[in-house]
Length: 144
Image (cartoon, rainbow, N blue to C red):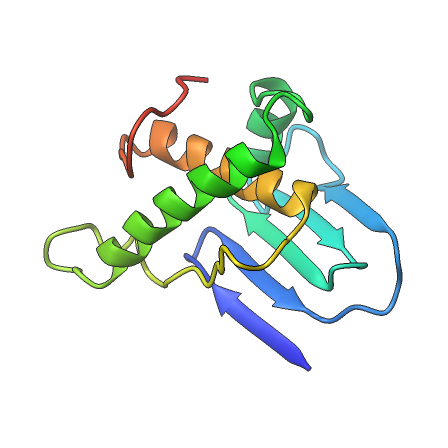
């Protein structure tokens, strides 16, 4: 069964069933690309995938993000839950918050174990988003 959820014109997160059993990470072919900058994380064992399309995110992730393993999975899950709840609240208030930034809700269920890679990618995108677009979703945001 295929489930898709779209988060912005710039970010696309889709969760769907896959058929292979390995995690994969794909970045755009051109490391200096500024258009169609895409990062894809597929955790096929858990049947979830995250695709983020945002100009500059791929290079930010490679150069400025905390390395994998720096935060625990439970830390990433907790931050993602808080930030995504606030994100979804802002989507519902288009006259108060920029509807070009908050176009669609993010379907993130804290009761589902998405795995480390999926949570790592979402966490880092939300750090990137908050710092790049001068938004503060909730609590402390690392100035990376």
